[in-house]
Length: 467
Image 1 (cartoon, rainbow, N blue to C red):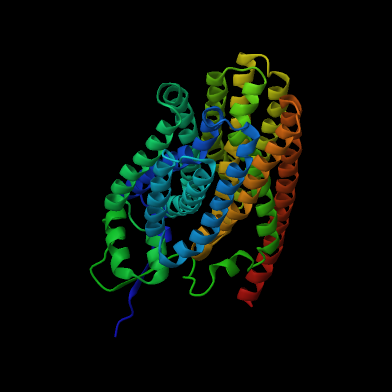
Image 2: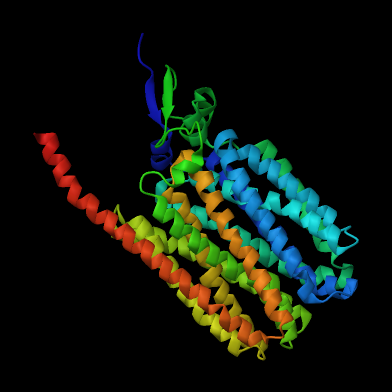
C-alpha cells in the first residue's frame, strides 16, 4: 500500500499568497477584537455617571473593577486549554455570545451587587475571546507578516476602546449610562452571527488533530494549485497535544521564559487597567470636564492602536534586517523602547493635568508606548509556544497577567480613597513601567545566550553528520 503524501500546512501558509479565506478569517478576528476591546472598557467610561446616578463614591467602584478583571483571568486560564483541545472557532463564538449577553443585561442592573455579578460573567467571556483571536490570527498568517497581522488584531482592542470612548462621550449625556451597555451587547451579537457563518477553524489546529478531510478544504481555498487528487496527510510544525497543553509552557527550557513573560504581563495589565479604570475619574478630579476626561481615555486607546501597528511593522522590519535568528530579539528591543517612551510620558501627564491640550497629547503618547507595547508582548507570547499549546500559552500569560488588572484598579481605589492627588498617583505608575523594561532586558539576554549556544552547537552537529 502506497504511503500517503505529506503536505506541511505551515510551510504552505508561509509560502503561498494570502488567500481570500485567510483575509476573511483575520478580518473577522479584527472585528471581534474591536468589540472585545470596547466592552472591556465600558465600565470605566460609565463610572462617573453611575456614581452620580446611584449616589455612590467613585472609590467604591474599585471592587467592581477588580472583580470584573479577575473574571477575565478565569476566562483566559479556562478557555485557552479548552481551545487547544476543542478548537479556536468554537471558543471564540461561545465566549463572544457570553460577554455580549451579560453586557446587554448590565444596562438593566438596578444596583451595584447585580452589576458586579453581570460584569463578572461578561468578564469570563471577554477573557476567553482574546487569546483565541490572537492564536487564530497567528495560525492563518504567513511568517513574513505574522507580527504585523497579530499586532493589527491586538490594536483592534485599542481601537474598540477609542470608539467606545467617543461613543460614551456622546451617548451618556444624551441617553444615560445604560446606552453604552446596550450598544456593547447588541453589536458583538451581530458580529457573532457573521463569525458563525464565515469564520473558519484553524487549519494548523485541524492538522495537529489529524482531521485531514477538513484541512483539505482549507488547503484548497488557500492554495488551489496544490495537488490533492491522491491520498494526502497534512502536517504542521508541531504535534497535537493529547494530555495537558499547560505542561508545554514549561517544557523545552521554556520555564524561566514563561515566568519572566508572566511578570511582564502582570506589570503591563496593572498599568493599563489602572489607566482604563481611573483615567476619567482622575482627570475629572484634576479639574478637567467630564467630556475631556472621557476624550483623554479615548485618545489613550487611539495612541495604543497606533503603537500596536507601529510595533508590529517595526518588529518585522528589524527582524528581517537581523536575519533568521533576529525575530524574537527584535520584538524584545522594540517593546522595551515602547515601555520607556510610555514611562517618560506618564511623567508628562502628571505635569500637565491643568493644561487640556498638553494632557491630551501626552496621554495619547502614553497609549502609544504602553498599550502599543502590550501588543508586542502578546506577539512574543504567540512566537514562544508551539501550535499545540499556543492558545494555552497566550491564554495563561494573559490570565496570569490579569492579576495586574486586579491589582491596578484596587491600588487606584485605595490611593483615591486615601486622598492622594492625581499628579502623585500618575507619577507612581512610572515604577512598574520601568520594571517591565528591566524584565524584558533579562528575556533579551536569555534570547541572545540561546542564539550563541545554537551557533556553537551547529558546527559540532555538522561534524557528527559528516563522520
